Length: 128
Image (cartoon, helix red, strand yellow):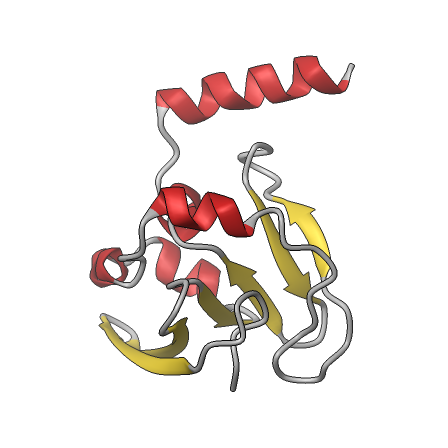
């Protein structure tokens, strides 16, 4: 499977959790993560997943500008979505197969901080 953002090869990354192993895909180039449906929520509360998102968040932000990406599983266009709890956090998703998070986005998704709450307030003010 190739990365939907930079076309580099995706490598499988096995994460051992308390509920069994979860295999996600990590880009060898931009370090973005592909999470099949349900894997993001499954890994969100598990401390072993802290090591999955090792890419540079600044590099990840540059890939936010890449538009019109296609699902690496089915080739259909992916939607740009905002997380329902942290509205400043945007990622791409395929309803059928999963979601892609740029480097740094999974760590942000996993941990909601006071800075995230502030970002969400600023984001909502900009939309008004």
